[in-house]
Image (cartoon, rainbow, N blue to C red; front, side, top):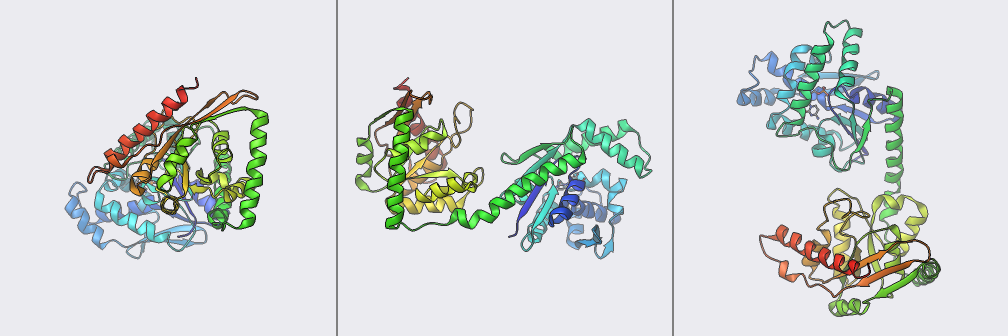
Length: 439
Ligand code: DC
């Protein structure tokens, strides 16, 4: 799989133009998925198929062969060998394409084709469900948006420049209807993926929009290049242990100068270690908390850290030193999961913030079930930790360890999800109780 840039957004947001300009500038292969749905719509028109007759549409679908070719920087769209680049943009296709694209079988066939196209090349792909369905793990995920009035204005100006007769009100109405259809289809509906970066082009010129997206892509390319380095696991040599011990001591001194450290309940870690590894679950207030838990523990604790943080050299060095496990957020990061389970099997200690992000509970973010899942699966206890303080210089900084929690009672066959939810709640209740102790 190459480097994948996925862009979604409503009709008229400019994703088509922006994508093709960026593709040229950054040497990515652009794939216009809308053109593919347009080909199927055109095939239905040519075969006089009523698009409400799904069975007939499916028959047409079997006969459709779509090719997207590049000729002198222009996209040539071929339907069964015939160049239909112009015809697919005409009004009859415009009118039915959204409905055609809502048919499940049509989507399944085209999504499969789109994924195939990305197997061997670096691509930039735009559409409606690229960030959510086609490539939920794309290297870059962008949602390009603009107010519907602004998008209608752009489409109207485009039509006028091509001498296509229309009036603004009609274009606006059509645009609203397309939005409604695109956002409410049962399959592949247009929506912003949680981790997609929103680029609102309402008040941006095309040049500004391109610059902004280019910046996002360049940053991701840099991270992608670092990937092997980020994932490299450094062996536990004597030298590494020595440097880690010195670094811990140095950081402990800094903390003691900056704060009045109040650490209690450490015997709970010893209790939890009786049968092997365990998971430390803390509330996440500040970047200082993970470091504090690690450097003030005599045990080696391996925290799970946001993958993106490791793109900064010094952080990456520290993460390697402390064997932090990088995790890509908002995706099913199987690599991170594998590393965590392996560590627990090796009787190591993991550190996880179930809130997922700093002050997640205050921000009303859903608490993550990952820690509960791993504890139940590996049969290890969880040690809850309450972190509190103002984090102002010379103030008290509390780290309070609670009694280990045995989560084996939540291991019920067929009710795994419910079990994890309940276990997560028990962990969080304990963390909150420990945090409140020092208020
Ligand atoms: O981007 P466009 O206007 O050429 O798209 C044509 C239609 O296809 C539009 O109504 C939305 C639909 N489409 C889709 O459902 N999924 C995609 N990935 C791309 C387009």
